Length: 243
Image (cartoon, rainbow, N blue to C red; front, side, top):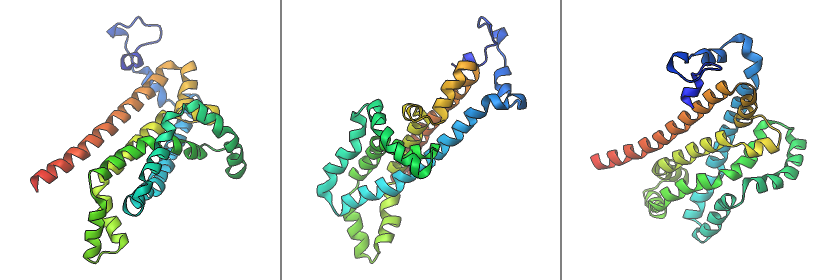
């Protein structure tokens, strides 16, 4: 794919025929209208990433911590709800989303950021697993009770004891959420919204070279996210070994 982005139109693929003209076209003012929809889709996808990550941090994470500390009997039910979306085909979920989004569009308007409500359901399994694995490696009840016995309030327990120990799981959940959002096509296509993947698909029909360039950028970005996740984990292990 990377070699394809350097290939001159109509070339047979020899090294002498490689060119940077496709990369230069991205920054050519005369091509602004050609790639305007793609950049709009990138902006929409980044906004959806921010909102979806906020949903994970403000809804899923507190719920999991609360269940672990106060309602352990609900752990199985939360796990079932969070993992259920991965067992249902995305196309089937979209068919159920369509009538719901008729109401959503009437309230908020037909705007791309509302896709975060639907994509937030799709990413639940990917966000739940790393956080739950991190929680399972700790004893949050003992940590919370120890902090409370030393006079800490619940906000201090959450902010200074629990969240720092869950940092790796939280970061992994956020990075996986971003990767899933940037790769989501089915929901946006069925609901007629412009996102990175839908814009990339349309651009591929007219300019496959630039479409391949942005596909490579997306792959590199996802690979960097995975490296960051691994780096965070190795840093924590190194610090514990040193202590």
